Amino acid sequence: MPSESADRDLDTRTDLQLLEQARSGHGGSFEVVFRRHQAVVLTFLARRVAQPELAADLMAETFATLLEQVRDQQKALPSVPVAWLLVTARHLLIDSQRRGRVDDRARRRLAMAPVVLDDRDLERLEEISAETDLLRELASRLAPDQFEALRARVLDEREYREIAAEMHCSEAVVRKRVSRALGVLRRVMEATGHA
Figure 1 (cartoon, rainbow, N blue to C red):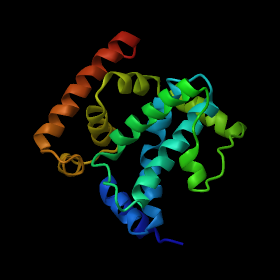
Figure 2 (cartoon, rainbow, N blue to C red; figure 1 turned 90 degrees about the vertical axis):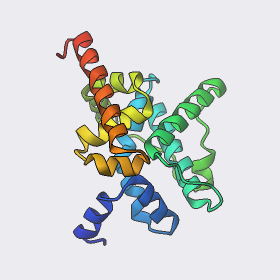
Figure 3 (cartoon, helix red, strand yellow; figure 1 turned 90 degrees about the horizontal axis):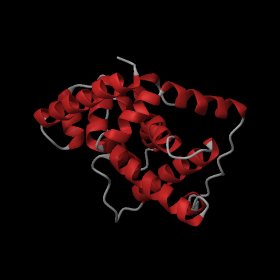
Protein backbone atom coordinates (compact mmCIF):
# COMPACT_ATOMS: atom_id res chain seq x y z
CA MET A 1 0.00 0.00 0.00
CA PRO A 2 1.51 3.39 -0.96
CA SER A 3 2.32 5.74 1.87
CA GLU A 4 0.46 9.00 2.44
CA SER A 5 3.61 10.98 1.61
CA ALA A 6 3.95 9.10 -1.68
CA ASP A 7 0.33 10.02 -2.50
CA ARG A 8 1.05 13.68 -1.69
CA ASP A 9 4.15 13.54 -3.89
CA LEU A 10 2.03 12.31 -6.81
CA ASP A 11 -0.55 15.02 -6.15
CA THR A 12 2.12 17.72 -6.59
CA ARG A 13 3.18 16.49 -10.02
CA THR A 14 1.84 17.91 -13.26
CA ASP A 15 -0.45 15.81 -15.42
CA LEU A 16 2.30 15.35 -17.99
CA GLN A 17 4.76 14.20 -15.31
CA LEU A 18 2.18 11.73 -14.06
CA LEU A 19 1.56 10.35 -17.54
CA GLU A 20 5.31 9.98 -18.07
CA GLN A 21 5.49 8.04 -14.79
CA ALA A 22 2.52 5.90 -15.85
CA ARG A 23 4.29 5.14 -19.13
CA SER A 24 7.26 3.94 -17.06
CA GLY A 25 4.98 1.55 -15.17
CA HIS A 26 3.91 3.53 -12.11
CA GLY A 27 0.21 2.58 -11.99
CA GLY A 28 -0.79 5.05 -9.29
CA SER A 29 0.20 7.99 -11.50
CA PHE A 30 -2.58 7.36 -14.00
CA GLU A 31 -5.05 7.07 -11.12
CA VAL A 32 -4.14 10.60 -10.01
CA VAL A 33 -4.78 11.97 -13.51
CA PHE A 34 -8.10 10.12 -13.53
CA ARG A 35 -9.13 11.52 -10.12
CA ARG A 36 -8.12 15.06 -11.15
CA HIS A 37 -10.16 15.13 -14.33
CA GLN A 38 -12.94 12.59 -13.89
CA ALA A 39 -15.52 15.16 -12.77
CA VAL A 40 -14.61 17.61 -15.55
CA VAL A 41 -14.92 14.96 -18.27
CA LEU A 42 -18.08 13.50 -16.76
CA THR A 43 -19.63 16.96 -16.42
CA PHE A 44 -18.70 17.81 -20.01
CA LEU A 45 -20.41 14.61 -21.22
CA ALA A 46 -23.39 14.72 -18.84
CA ARG A 47 -24.28 18.14 -20.21
CA ARG A 48 -24.50 16.72 -23.70
CA VAL A 49 -26.34 13.41 -23.16
CA ALA A 50 -29.61 12.58 -21.47
CA GLN A 51 -28.67 9.29 -19.78
CA PRO A 52 -26.14 9.16 -16.90
CA GLU A 53 -25.09 5.65 -17.98
CA LEU A 54 -24.16 6.94 -21.44
CA ALA A 55 -22.07 9.75 -19.92
CA ALA A 56 -20.30 7.22 -17.67
CA ASP A 57 -19.61 4.86 -20.62
CA LEU A 58 -18.18 7.70 -22.69
CA MET A 59 -16.05 8.88 -19.78
CA ALA A 60 -14.68 5.36 -19.26
CA GLU A 61 -13.84 5.02 -22.94
CA THR A 62 -12.18 8.46 -22.93
CA PHE A 63 -9.83 7.49 -20.09
CA ALA A 64 -9.24 4.03 -21.61
CA THR A 65 -8.18 5.74 -24.83
CA LEU A 66 -5.75 7.91 -22.87
CA LEU A 67 -4.38 4.85 -21.07
CA GLU A 68 -3.79 3.14 -24.41
CA GLN A 69 -1.90 6.20 -25.63
CA VAL A 70 0.18 6.22 -22.45
CA ARG A 71 1.06 2.55 -22.90
CA ASP A 72 2.02 2.98 -26.56
CA GLN A 73 5.66 4.09 -26.45
CA GLN A 74 5.44 5.21 -30.10
CA LYS A 75 2.74 7.81 -29.41
CA ALA A 76 3.45 11.24 -27.96
CA LEU A 77 1.86 12.06 -24.64
CA PRO A 78 -0.64 14.95 -24.70
CA SER A 79 1.00 18.17 -23.52
CA VAL A 80 -2.25 19.40 -21.88
CA PRO A 81 -4.01 16.18 -20.84
CA VAL A 82 -7.29 17.75 -19.73
CA ALA A 83 -7.71 19.46 -23.10
CA TRP A 84 -6.84 16.16 -24.82
CA LEU A 85 -9.44 14.37 -22.66
CA LEU A 86 -12.17 16.89 -23.51
CA VAL A 87 -11.41 16.76 -27.23
CA THR A 88 -11.37 12.94 -27.14
CA ALA A 89 -14.62 12.87 -25.16
CA ARG A 90 -16.20 15.13 -27.76
CA HIS A 91 -15.04 12.89 -30.64
CA LEU A 92 -16.29 9.77 -28.85
CA LEU A 93 -19.63 11.47 -28.19
CA ILE A 94 -20.04 12.48 -31.84
CA ASP A 95 -19.05 8.98 -32.95
CA SER A 96 -21.52 7.38 -30.50
CA GLN A 97 -24.33 9.62 -31.76
CA ARG A 98 -23.54 8.66 -35.35
CA ARG A 99 -23.35 4.92 -34.57
CA GLY A 100 -26.17 4.86 -32.05
CA ARG A 101 -23.95 3.24 -29.42
CA VAL A 102 -20.76 3.89 -27.44
CA ASP A 103 -17.69 2.32 -28.97
CA ASP A 104 -15.87 0.35 -26.28
CA ARG A 105 -12.88 -0.87 -28.30
CA ALA A 106 -10.26 0.70 -26.00
CA ARG A 107 -11.89 -0.79 -22.90
CA ARG A 108 -12.11 -4.22 -24.54
CA ARG A 109 -8.45 -4.09 -25.64
CA LEU A 110 -7.49 -3.21 -22.06
CA ALA A 111 -9.83 -5.94 -20.74
CA MET A 112 -11.68 -3.40 -18.63
CA ALA A 113 -14.99 -4.48 -17.14
CA PRO A 114 -18.07 -2.64 -18.39
CA VAL A 115 -19.19 0.34 -16.34
CA VAL A 116 -22.06 -0.67 -14.08
CA LEU A 117 -23.80 2.10 -12.16
CA ASP A 118 -25.64 1.37 -8.95
CA ASP A 119 -28.17 3.68 -7.28
CA ARG A 120 -25.43 5.46 -5.35
CA ASP A 121 -23.48 6.12 -8.55
CA LEU A 122 -26.59 7.49 -10.23
CA GLU A 123 -27.26 9.74 -7.23
CA ARG A 124 -23.68 10.98 -7.39
CA LEU A 125 -24.04 11.72 -11.10
CA GLU A 126 -27.19 13.68 -10.36
CA GLU A 127 -25.35 15.57 -7.59
CA ILE A 128 -22.50 16.38 -9.94
CA SER A 129 -25.02 17.69 -12.47
CA ALA A 130 -26.85 19.75 -9.87
CA GLU A 131 -23.68 21.09 -8.24
CA THR A 132 -21.96 21.96 -11.47
CA ASP A 133 -24.55 23.67 -13.63
CA LEU A 134 -22.50 26.83 -13.49
CA LEU A 135 -19.26 24.94 -14.13
CA ARG A 136 -20.79 23.13 -17.11
CA GLU A 137 -22.06 26.37 -18.58
CA LEU A 138 -18.63 27.87 -18.13
CA ALA A 139 -16.91 24.85 -19.71
CA SER A 140 -19.14 25.13 -22.75
CA ARG A 141 -18.23 28.81 -23.24
CA LEU A 142 -14.47 28.62 -22.68
CA ALA A 143 -11.66 27.31 -24.81
CA PRO A 144 -10.20 24.16 -23.16
CA ASP A 145 -6.95 25.96 -22.25
CA GLN A 146 -8.86 28.79 -20.53
CA PHE A 147 -11.07 26.33 -18.64
CA GLU A 148 -8.05 24.29 -17.54
CA ALA A 149 -6.17 27.41 -16.39
CA LEU A 150 -9.20 28.57 -14.40
CA ARG A 151 -9.76 25.13 -12.89
CA ALA A 152 -6.12 24.75 -11.92
CA ARG A 153 -5.87 28.24 -10.39
CA VAL A 154 -9.27 28.67 -8.74
CA LEU A 155 -10.52 25.17 -7.95
CA ASP A 156 -7.17 23.41 -7.38
CA GLU A 157 -5.51 26.56 -5.95
CA ARG A 158 -2.28 25.90 -7.84
CA GLU A 159 0.45 28.47 -8.40
CA TYR A 160 0.69 30.29 -11.74
CA ARG A 161 4.24 29.07 -12.35
CA GLU A 162 3.18 25.44 -11.84
CA ILE A 163 0.24 25.82 -14.21
CA ALA A 164 2.47 27.55 -16.78
CA ALA A 165 4.98 24.69 -16.64
CA GLU A 166 2.22 22.13 -17.17
CA MET A 167 0.62 24.09 -20.00
CA HIS A 168 4.00 24.88 -21.62
CA CYS A 169 3.47 28.63 -21.67
CA SER A 170 4.47 31.68 -19.65
CA GLU A 171 2.89 32.75 -16.37
CA ALA A 172 1.63 35.87 -18.16
CA VAL A 173 -0.29 33.70 -20.63
CA VAL A 174 -1.81 31.68 -17.76
CA ARG A 175 -2.79 34.89 -15.95
CA LYS A 176 -4.46 36.17 -19.12
CA ARG A 177 -6.36 32.90 -19.62
CA VAL A 178 -7.56 32.98 -16.01
CA SER A 179 -8.54 36.64 -16.31
CA ARG A 180 -10.54 36.00 -19.49
CA ALA A 181 -12.17 32.93 -17.94
CA LEU A 182 -13.15 34.94 -14.86
CA GLY A 183 -14.73 37.57 -17.12
CA VAL A 184 -16.80 34.88 -18.82
CA LEU A 185 -17.67 33.42 -15.39
CA ARG A 186 -18.94 36.83 -14.25
CA ARG A 187 -21.15 37.16 -17.33
CA VAL A 188 -22.47 33.59 -16.92
CA MET A 189 -23.24 34.23 -13.25
CA GLU A 190 -25.10 37.44 -14.09
CA ALA A 191 -27.06 35.72 -16.88
CA THR A 192 -28.06 32.77 -14.67
CA GLY A 193 -28.88 34.84 -11.59
CA HIS A 194 -25.92 33.62 -9.53
CA ALA A 195 -24.36 37.10 -9.25
